[in-house]
Image (tube, rainbow, N blue to C red; front, side, top):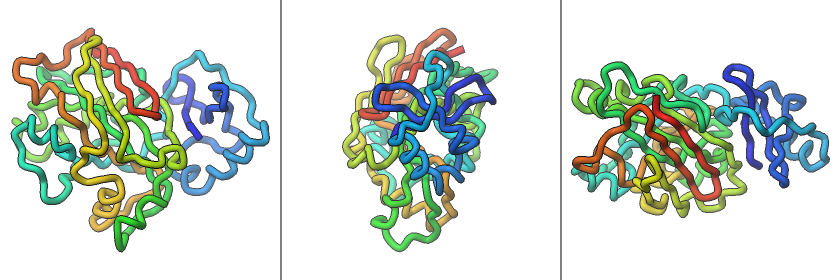
Length: 279
């Protein structure tokens, strides 16, 4: 299934895409696409869709993030070999983990706002994992895949001065308002048989900046979930941003960082496409 939320900010309706591309209203099944639904309600949604019981929704309005505000947004840094190389960093021996505020998550086509005082706002196309089950001290990475509800596109927008030049942790350069466009769809795990073989790309003003594949991750999806479960309890609806390939402005000397009026476009194979204007 491809799950989504449509409507104005704060009034999104849960939906699922029918085979003809029409959004079908899930509000009779669930109040929202959240952790409770992802943990227990997806089978009911599948049955209702197959039975033709879901009314159509207007497809012309705003698309919101495909899940309501997640409990956690956990990010993996330096998780692509080519990205580590372009930034001059050594490949990590263990996953580099940081957190992003959950209220950074916005719709896939919503504006991205440059923070006050920023001169180094950057882009990062990433594969996002959305949890559908609880993970606590998993015994092995092999246990992880069954806990994935699905996958989505994430733009891990970053302010590099705040992140790297202002002391402390990376979080302050990652948690500014609108810094996580997400979606357009949450594609359920059964439709993504190999998350380690997906092409992902990002353009700025029509110029291809990032062109990579998830097969170049240092730590794959299963390993990341297993690893995180040793340090924190993962809950249904939590989001994990799994890192970005080469091509970010930070790794391109002389390349300008984002400015007002720039247009970002992102895609991941099988997961759809995003487009944001920088304001």
